[in-house]
Image (cartoon, rainbow, N blue to C red; front, side, top):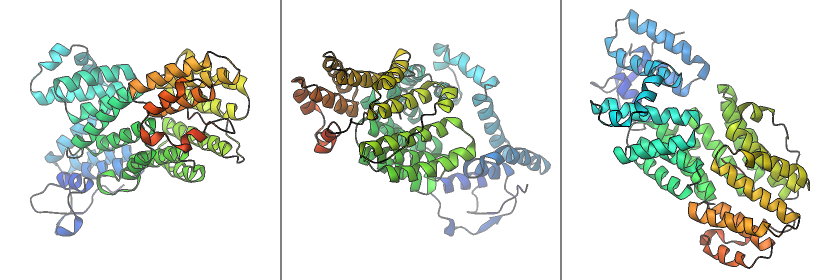
Length: 432
């Protein structure tokens, strides 16, 4: 594999700085003329990692090490060191254990000097908790980090923890703060993640037009957003928003574009998310009176467990309700409610069980809907509040009018109310 590359750069600008500025969209390629025939090979390897075939990452890294050592490129050492540290952190290596040790001794971590070392360890600890999908630990540690230093990366991790903890309005504010700070930080990966968080919070709040705008930022813009992995997440987010806008065919096209990248990467989690999105699209088709044959295969989600299994079970429960199979829907919902992967899954399972009770004529269903509406109001999860209000209305409970009036004006529409009429309404039960 050839690792040498040619890059036109401005005199005095090193290739790694040039590459970073190009990725951030800050340096147009037409204003430069000087040719560098042999930049550090690690620059090329990093570009392969971000833009190329994921299977070439290891080959590019090995070739970069050989080439840079052969040509005695001392200036490439910092980049090689950063790469090695990243792999040690996320691969449960020595660095991961060091980070966890300091994270468990915050009084030592907070007083650590130099400050750059402290900041690296704080960010690394948040990243590890996010990778472990322990949302309570993510929220708690990132919240502490925000209080101690308030870096944009801290708000990024905090947004994740808050959203999965069903504190949606707080998550929205944290994601907005993260996006503003990261947009100028030279950290395109976390910046893209913050945009995705903004989009997911918009879904929870029923702001589907905003969700599609964030999806466009990820999927279609060039420059700092042109990272294949994040572009795929943009298509996925667009597909989810299109389901809510009742356009399942366009949603499937978006899911197809996301799936191509995720299958190429061989990452089962994102693939499971896309498959769940496709089941949701079929649920919308059923609501529109069209023929659909949703996949009821849970095997891939069961292997992953956690939120992936909860998501699939929730959407399939919605499908079973549409098919008048309330017993099967209840079985899936109780499975999620018994041990939810996160508060989001627990809340949607409660909504589904309340709907099953309503269909059975259980008078207690109205009280469950009212409790969920109160919870949605306190957390800022307005779309859950819409569904709870519709459930109260269908239960002919007088509390429905007041709860409906308290929702944001843009959600008090005939379209939202219509989901409860005619065929069994779509419950939109997903953790996104």
